[in-house]
Length: 168
Image 1 (cartoon, rainbow, N blue to C red):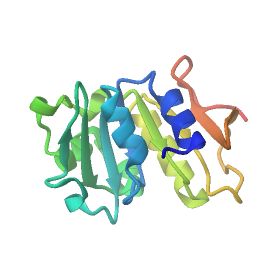
Image 2 (cartoon, one colour; image 1 turned 90 degrees about the horizontal axis):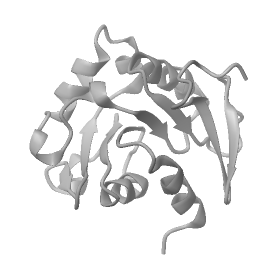
Image 3 (cartoon, one colour; image 1 turned 45 degrees about the vertical axis):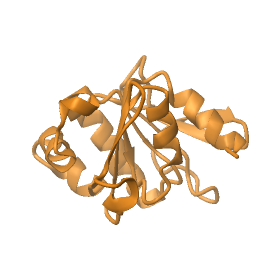
């Protein structure tokens, strides 16, 4: 059974076509749900188990999910984060992701405070929206707009309509 908060988060992220999930670990439920809805998702984590989805690529009806090793801090500091993401995702147009340059949104679930700034910076460098939830007991350390969803709060650091960082 899918939790109310997960369903609400997927509904909120469904408006984006190409997404990058930061810190996915082995919790790929949101990424899978988005791929099932026809979205193209790259999920990265420093400790990702690429075997979680076989070879790390899962074809979905009209979308795709690619699970790859990636460090948001290193990507935020990379001279060309797009190339780094492309290299880690082993770009394969047969599953619908042709370039990280086309990422519409960067999102994270349960994003710890120390990864919030690099995540927002990476989203800015990719000219993408940035949305996340926190560990629950932490407040965001970056300027955000809050959106109340069932059983969770979604923090928007960069919106799709106005991708400039939120002023808090």
